[in-house]
Every structure is written in C-alpha cells, then in structure tokens.
Length: 208
Figure (cartoon, rainbow, N blue to C red):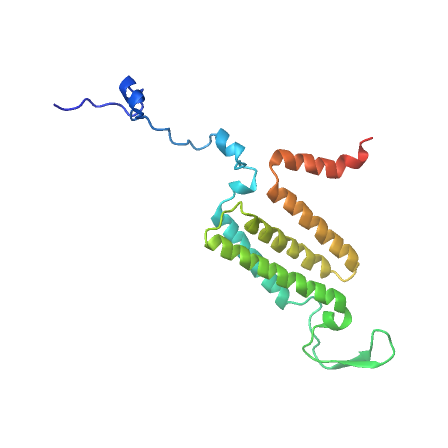
C-alpha cells in the first residue's frame, strides 16, 4: 500500500515527536535581504563586523597591498643619482662622492630612508602572510589574519608619510602608531564596543 505523501512543511506527527523524529520538517532557507539571525549576531558575524567579510575579498585586498608595497620598495622617493656627483657632506666638513645608481634618499636622508625601507618590507611580508593564511583556509576571524591585515595596511600609511621630506620623522611614526591602533580597534571589536571605545578616546577628555 502506497504511503500518503506529506508536505515537507507539515507539522510533525505526535508519534514522530515521541520517537525523536523531525517529522520531515526542515528549517527554511535564508532569504536574501533578511537581517542576520540571532545566533549570527551573537557570534559577531553581522554585516558591520570583520567576520562578515568574504575570504575571497580579503585575498584580493592582500594581493593589492602586496603589489603596492613591492612598488614602494622598488621606487625610492627622490630617485637615484644619474651620475657620480661630488658634494659636501651633511656636516660640511669633507667632500663626498655619490655614486650613480644609488638612492638619493639614502645618501641625503638616511634615517628616513631606513624607516621607509623597513615599512615597505614589513608591509610586503605581512600581506604575503595574510595571503598565505587565506589560501590555506585559515578562518577570517583568526587573530593571525587580522593582525597581518592591520600591520600591512598601516605600513602603507607609514611609507606614504615618510616619503614626504618636509615632515618630521617622529611625527610620521606617531601617525603610523595612531593608524595601527585605530585599525586594530576597527577589525577586532564588536560594533557596540567599538563605538564606546572610539567615543571614550575622542570625547573622554571633554567630560567633566
């Protein structure tokens, strides 16, 4: 005798409930445009959190950062000496010959040059590490992926501000530290807690 056909959304029979069956009832598929479920919001996976990012999108971002940091590292601000040039040293006590092909920034602004090169190499390594982590399917919300992104992205800011010769080097490092902390707050904290922290940092001194 053929069994009667039951609609999949029909209520479970009393016997099925007693035996632990689900009665053919399945949870409905998520509908596009609906807000995230309660469980997802509790886990911090809402649309305005780092967890909500797609791994493929972050992989593209990491690749772009790798390309930019490589470009910065091979294009030294100020260019290179076109020919051997003899000029007075920075202290003016002796004559120095600058060789053709050497970076001008290294010879005339040595501390700024080494900070620039260090930032470009750190950004390049961090973006490569982020790319490798995403390729091996490391979770997007892992601290390793987040920290790699923060270091790589903030390194872009440091290379930019250091390449400006009229700024003070200590000020450039302070800007980089501020950007590093800001990015870490953005990618690590829940939106509610993030708003409270930013409010305390920006407006805490105004409260009496």
